[in-house]
Image (cartoon, rainbow, N blue to C red; front, side, top):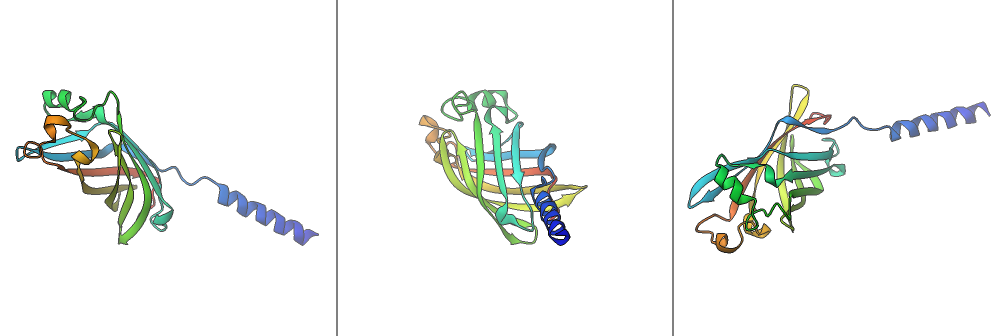
Length: 189
């Protein structure tokens, strides 16, 4: 009977450890950035979003079990020109009155090399959903993990620049998106 109780106690202890919460993983907004470069009449136009958030569960040793979800406040765009910022939130562009946020939800994460991953997921902008593959490099710095990378989206896939602005000779279709996300609680790669 004593051996049975000892095994039961060990099983309960293991169950409690398995159910214990993993250290909180979160986005550290200070130092994080989501930026982009588009081209208007061949001239690069840079911008960034000031407000965004991420929820994640990621272990570099088991990337397939990870998940990432992000939201970006589209009205928080800054482009260095107030007239452009006032225009881009209107209906032909982001239509932030109807679609205030862009979203990203991962479907799969896979390792592709030392400290490098591909995150496949659904990007939602202005009511349109498209699958994107996001290359991510992880590096440790000062007890935090930095996730960085870049990828290209086609703005017309998301109806960004409807109507007269759909002319790609005025505004290029490809938009380069860059990110640097400072993360707390993610194990070093």
